[in-house]
Structure formats: C-alpha cells, structure tokens
Image (cartoon, rainbow, N blue to C red):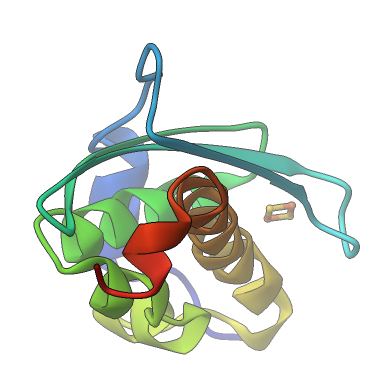
Length: 130
Ligand code: FES
C-alpha cells in the first residue's frame, strides 16, 4: 500500500494558511459524502486575484495537507486559475495520495471552488470579467 510522502507529512505537521478571514470576500463549506468530514475556505480577492485564503477542516491528515498545499498553489493566482485547480493536481504536488484518500484532496479543491462561487455570487460583474 502506498504511504504518505515526506512532503505530505510536513504539510500535515505544519499546515499553511490555517484559520479564518473576518468578513471574507467569499466563503465555502463542504462536506465529504465519502467520510462526512468538513472543510471551510475563506478568500480575500483583490484585482481579480486571490489575495488571501484561509482554511479550517475537520478532516484527516490527507485533508489537512491537501488544503495546505492547495492554499499555496492558489494564493496570488487569478481567480480563473485558482478555480481550476483540481484534486489530482493537489495530490500530485504532494507526491501522490493513496487512491482511497483522493476524496480528501477533493474536499479542499471543492471548498475553494465553493468560496469562489460565493464571491462571484456577491460580485456578478467579476464573473463577466468587468
Ligand atoms: Fe475524511 Fe480524509 S477521511 S477528509
């Protein structure tokens, strides 16, 4: 059975961007249909870019490491780029995940998309690129 990479374990022990953004520009909360765990993502948007991102999760080690890695991959990116990050890309950046844990990285990517959707709902002009 495939085990966790050293990089994944490092992100689990030292997760980046954990916390809450007060009055965020977007907020997403999703639960995994596989395990029932939860992920919350808060975003701050400036000039069409993801200026800041924080997350909280009641998930496993893979979920924590995935959200940490995703936060580093997404921060500073244009919103369209951040919204297209996938669970596979996050898992690959972490050196791979056992197949049985892929839903954990999907939790992070889905919560980020939900937060960006919330931002677009509040700012429809941004969705149109205005
Ligand atoms: Fe639930 Fe990993 S087992 S997020």
